[in-house]
Amino acid sequence: MKVVLAYSGGLDTSTILVLLKKKYNADVITVTVDVGQEDDMKGVEERAYELGASKHYTIDAKKEFAEEYVFKAIKANALYEGKYPLGTALARPLIAKKVAEIAMEENADAVAHGCTGKGNDQVRFDLTLKAYLKPGIKILAPVRELKLTRSVNIKILSEYGYKVPETHKKYSIDENLWSRSIEGGELDDPLKEPGEDAFAWTMPPEKAPDKPAYISIEFDEGIPVKVNDEKMDSVQMIKYLNMFLGSHGFGRIDLIESRVVGLKSREVYEAPAALALIEAHQDLERMVLTPKELRFKRLIDEMWTDLVYQGLWIDPLRTHLESSINSMNKYICGVVKLKVFKGSLSVVGRNSPYSLYSREVIDYNTGWYPSDEEARGFIMIHGMYALTSLKVRNSK
Image (cartoon, rainbow, N blue to C red; front, side, top):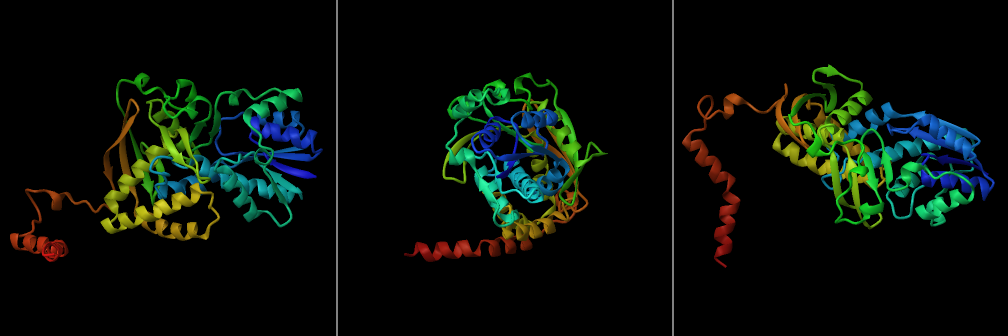
């Protein structure tokens, strides 16, 4: 049996690789998709061969991830349950697609992944793989099928004489350009504050610089194109913002999250660039869009975000929603100025050629002013339904 394994080099997929080789005598081809994780890709490849892979692919998908997935999330202000910027959820369909392409190129009998039966990723991987794989290629989920736990995985690797990956001894870590997620271990106690050893991208806010820093972000049709007037490549920009904002203690998220599989989980994330770019994008939208456009867009943004989180990237509704999202983002052009200080971030200025804000109109001392008659008429019409309902219903 020839199996293509979505391989991260971590504890779960390392164990799967060993089991497929030692227990099932499978020919295993490993695929690692680089979406910006801070792994030593050469080291991941060497470990795959050490554990028995017959061939290994490393696919650099950082730019595709940034421009075909992350930028769509910015346009949709994608924050699941108001907080999580979908880092892992966005990357999974891209990784699954790349793995499926290799599986068909290699004429594989099966594709394997390391998702658990309690997590969201099993949904994201399985559905995307089903969409891209030709009929007859099986989808294997050994962690789910064999009920593998972290302690069992450590035991299996040790029994076969392999070293346990150091990075996964305390927490389960997943990272890419858009976010770094930390879960498991002591974080399973929702009352316990995360220790500093959980974080890698962000400075403790109390140790951040004592002076605030300012940064400006320019958008063109909803897409960030410049930082501090400097045009940046998509990947370079996200990495820079993660580094700069993280050094000021900004970008930590701690929430109880509603998983697709019906469980509440405690999730800790670092996402400085994601949180800042979405905050800036939303602020520019408020300046440019009409009130009714804003209200409608909040609805479709939430629907888009839920689809992605729930593993339904392949759902045709996503593309329909994106048509409206892209249409409104056509006018989201301009600059937003941000201030970051000891873990906090705020918008302190903005400008757009499509701004609906008029200083001349809003100024109380100059410019246009409604007459008393116009104001009274508007107020009466605006409140007619409410006033009429009070009269009618109070009589009962």
